[in-house]
Length: 326
Image: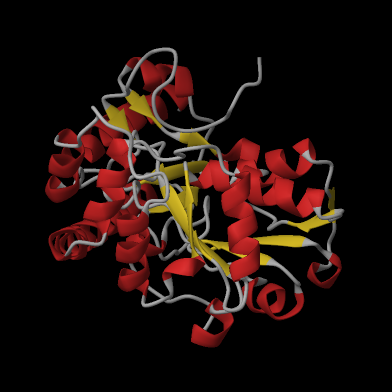
């Protein structure tokens, strides 16, 4: 059995104080939650998702032909990698620190990793990037030189500062992958979509042909339809104000305890504690952080901003561990 490294629930259930995932801690968005709860699961969705494609296209001000529906961001990652391999692609460019499914898909389709974006057949970007919550330093080079680029925008709706490294012209040249369930605080509902580059409609149709029938169920259709509604966008904007305060407080909390906390643009970041953490003891107290070793950052922990109550629990637990360590 393949083990997927990820934050969130584990064999012990749902953590009471979960700092290990990057979902919006203010969620769920009431508008999106109501839409999901009232979704009509008695019937199949429209297999072409005509109304949903039109709504997503209008939201992004693009032609509906450029919208590719996906079961999840991970499903799209696997599908576009498969298409590239089928078309004879052999090389992939990956960020130094990135979501593991980019690598998993490349390895499954035997794409060789290259250090040179211009030599790649597929290149991946993500901003703000996980796990660091910052801009990708290679973004402009990759967008300008790689022949086929996917920009994962899972965390763009949760951006607390800064802006995309790519301007409007560059964004028109890359694939944009959107998975709003994180921003809406409903990660259990899987549903995503991609916007094809200008002039890439034939590839968008080819990717549609590779999809299974009905990649989205009724609940995911409801989630994505709610995502583009003004009420959801207003809620998201207000949640970002809250998250800025929670993130600043959480950074101060950890800094005061001796952690090294670098700057970032998202409500999550990687930080280094002054001594080794006892993750098992933290988990026993209902607290879960994300070990960043799988990202190539041993000794660091990815921490998402959580409520004041959760931060108080984390503070107490870390104080206890510091006392035992000294």
